[in-house]
Image (cartoon, rainbow, N blue to C red; front, side, top):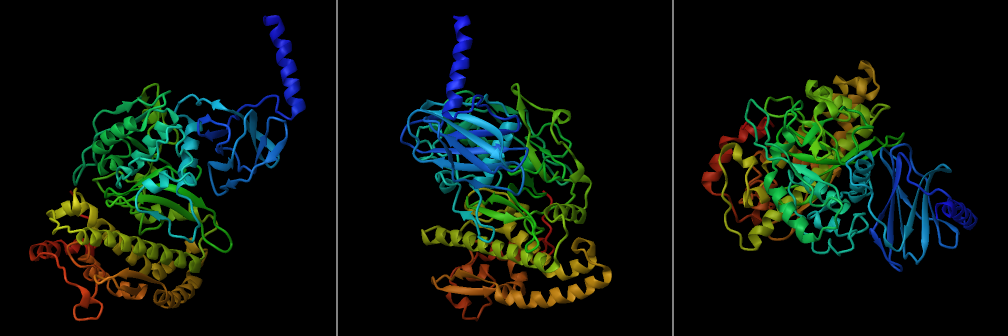
Length: 573
């Protein structure tokens, strides 16, 4: 039998090559082709995603059972690692197919596709799977640069195959009834465990405390779940494990000390080739964002680093990197910054000295140094002051539009018959559960006040840091004056709208909102009417539709801690 086998293989290879098939169809060392669903059926669509860590991808080719080659219509990302190229075969016929991905004519990977179970790759959290995870995250939250990308929860994202490459990839219609409402701290864990579920990978988590004023959070020993490994697991099992995970993690998990070994995340160096989509950003006060996309700087527009976050009301929104959304501070109670999930290998988590790209450099930076380094990564050719100002204004408007939806969610609670929401005491207003967490906005409003300060101080920033804008000290003074004039013009033109208590739409310019900045120091209580929360003054037409007010005791509580918001400094625990 062995004697006859080799000639037969040679003959088969010759037949395949004559038909147009590649004689050796294998995945590449740095490029991989993924398909969904895992079980392919004739007459149904098949999604294809090629992911590379070596170079941008340019074309996907499909070789059909007759040996004919077809160029697939693709969607690509070109702005940063890992690079991806996606396509859909709709529908796939019966028989044996090959998919090949190329970069500028050079073949980087090939994969066979056929009806039936196409199997899984060996489920190991290596660079291949990390790159796939990153590409999956980027595609899921992608959208036009000039649009506000947001969703009421994670559910519509996961249930849309245009966004979610892994939609129903197990062939069980598993995403149709999937509950997906993670909040801020749960969000990256939900994404990671969902990806593990769909790909037969393990996932891990710890229970952590919140730390203290002088010490970052610490965590218990790790829980490693292998329930999905090399198995096709139904939705019911994922739901049980996901609930346990969500109950165990909280905002302290991301704020652990940078040098700690007992963590779910580890800190990264500030290098663009390392900060892939899927990387988290943990701010000093417990908020967490997930990076989704780098947009290259051009001669006409500044570069952008996008991230998404989840809010207590479960809404999901895309944010730009800037001081108003990525808060950074060197404080004793947290280890903030960009971090990656600690990899699992041989049923254990890697220690710090085994980790790829482990670095505590962020801990040695002042806020000014941190932001300067990131802006250099995002805009390696230096910032154009006018473009940078307009991008900052746009980012503030995006935050305001997100707040509109958050306030509307609180109004909906009362329209449905909700009663007065109990307000926690002291610093607990930032960290609690129940309706206050869902509908109040103290953390968001403090970030909004910081964002307003950043915009207002932007002209001064040009003069203080001329090197960021490729200016001399003398030219910076002239540009500062020009930015001040531009600021005065644009803040009257950029506007947002909110629905008053009577349902009527009210329009506010950014200039009006900036003039009301102090009102946002007391605007986070959902028991107040929407007009109060947007800073309307008593006796005005705007205020006339307001008929609901927070209890006097709560007003006194808010007044007592107002300086936190006025100084834009969150209190220690």
